[in-house]
Length: 408
Image 1 (tube, rainbow, N blue to C red):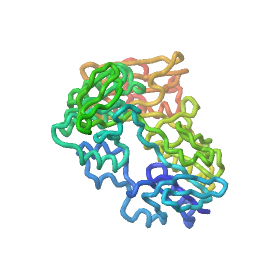
Image 2 (image 1 turned 60 degrees about the horizontal axis):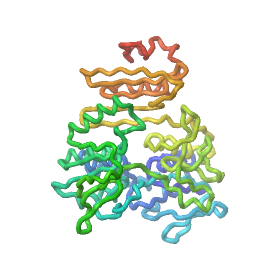
Image 3 (image 1 turned 135 degrees about the vertical axis):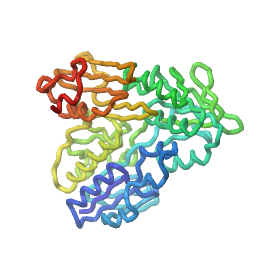
Image 4 (image 1 turned 90 degrees about the vertical axis):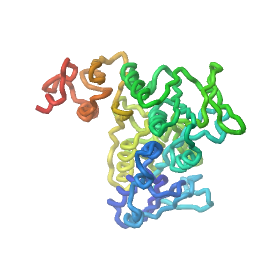
């Protein structure tokens, strides 16, 4: 049985290692369009901020492929999958045969489709090449605009601000992380960003990027105003890398559709990580949510199924963690809730901490914690297991509740 993995990151490596444990002698090939050994993408903003060095990015030892007996094909992009012939065509013209294929091709940054986005000085932060190109152009005294107020945008703005740059975070709505935080939690995060020197521009929709002498000079907004900038970094989201699967009938710009074993519509092609639409654990619907731990879990499960050890995927619990200065934020599950939910919120102004619990049918389904996040694991476990709150020794919704009381 010949196994091929397209993708050299979280899901792909987890899948490859799982297959190797179950199939000690099987040939396993890993294909990546990047020339580098495995590295941790979420750490790129920490590298940008000077918190770590490039050597800290690498996920595996230098003899990783040899140790696991993987055949790496690096720096070559997969451009076509012929499902009937069970072959993968690379941009180099080479053809790679497979018996079972794991697509863990990840995602790429979305650009805003506005005039000027191709100018020198406009960047995204998704790959090591992106970081290196940006690093070469950064100069002291530059004014920087970060378009996008999601996790990537915030982490990028924070990284650049702590290096002393004049940074403006451009947000379309009235707050950052509008899909993740309510107004109270967002206000605490706004203060944390301001405290580290990040300027915030709300209700700001980019209409174009202006230039002088062929270089970026500012971000033009739809209201006609302009934010001066010598560099623009875009962090408005990602789109799955699935185009090369079009002839296999699988390409989907919203992520590949998979079953409970992470198998696609092609029986011998599985998919995991940022290129798929996994099942949401709470709603049961397929959704798109790119997160490293989920990619690892999906890769392991897909690898086991590929190797003939059937396992069902229980679904993804959406969750995220963010640190800005001394302010910590953790949110997970149905943080917004709906008309069927009850919300219990507590804000401690003195401690600058906030807790929001979302309950549905007597079960915790969402949590937002700002400031005091040490007990986040307990709340997330209650959501993950669907534990009825009435079965607990104390009710988390009660005033003055402390997690320690659950543990006796």
